[in-house]
Amino acid sequence: MYTNTSSVVLLTLESLGLSNAYIYPAFLFGTLMYLVTMLCNLLVLATIIVSKKLHKPMFILLLNLPVCDMVGATAFVPHFLFSIVTENRVVSHPLCITQAFLMHFYGTGNLLILSAMAYDRYIAICCPLRYNTIMNPQHLIRIIISIWLLNFSLIVTLILLLARFKICRTNIVDLYCNNPSLMKLICEDTRVNNYYGLFTIIFFQGGSLIVIIYTYGQILRTCIMTNQSDAIQKAIRTCGTHLVVFLILEINTMVTLVFHRFENVSPFLRRSLGVSVLLFPPFLDPIIYGLKTTELKQSIIMFLKRNVGSTKM
Image 1 (cartoon, one colour):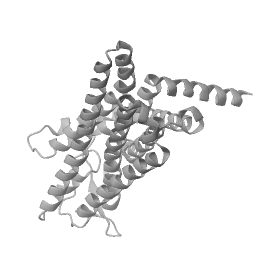
Image 2: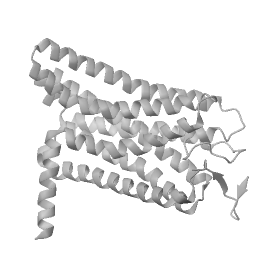
Image 3: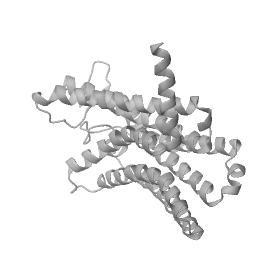
Image 4: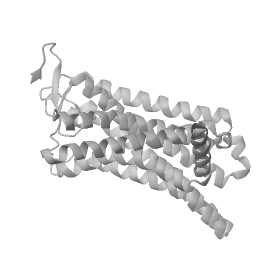
């Protein structure tokens, strides 16, 4: 077991396996992708805050998504880029625990936010006359507070259950720290952690999937009952973007977590899917919503014209 002079336990993350010829191209590509991710998410965030016409429940809920995405990207990418350049895959145990918390906080937060957005679309399309009454500011604030409190409390519990153990190994089997990989460093009885981990998977993954299936089923049913092609097309435009974002996150996250419980699954496949959960949703979310959501797209263009134009002057 590696320790430093302060007796802080040091862990070794899985090697990147990059040859010298690919180190700096990989670093430059990763840096560019991270900067674009942060810039696009900040742009969406600033546009929604500044544009009064976007101060609607759908966009107020969407406001939480770039915040969550930036947490996930920042928890992973900077340290990952640093380890590429230095070729040093060592990380302290406390820092690893912190990264694991942020990783899971990001993933489960995204699922809860996307579920809340699906609920908002369900009310808007299936109960249009009651929409303003149901999605009033007070109810909207309660939804947002519930998302963050529920996410924080369940993930903190997950990490506290993990942190109570002493580790007997130091090699992390993934490219970043997460609960399943840290659990493999423990030699004691971890049944309580396993049961709680399964509960969180069922609650977040299963619960979000049920919400999406029900709300989208009701939306499709309402559109068919109206027997209007324009209503169906509008629903597809409104909800199609949301469904794509949700499926990217849901499938990758579910498969990655399940793969950790089977030893015969390819480690390369598991690691690739795990990294894709942290790279692609934060990168694609602002681009998909910015291009496919008409109101947001128009507001972003106006925001850029106003601010870029004032800078030139």
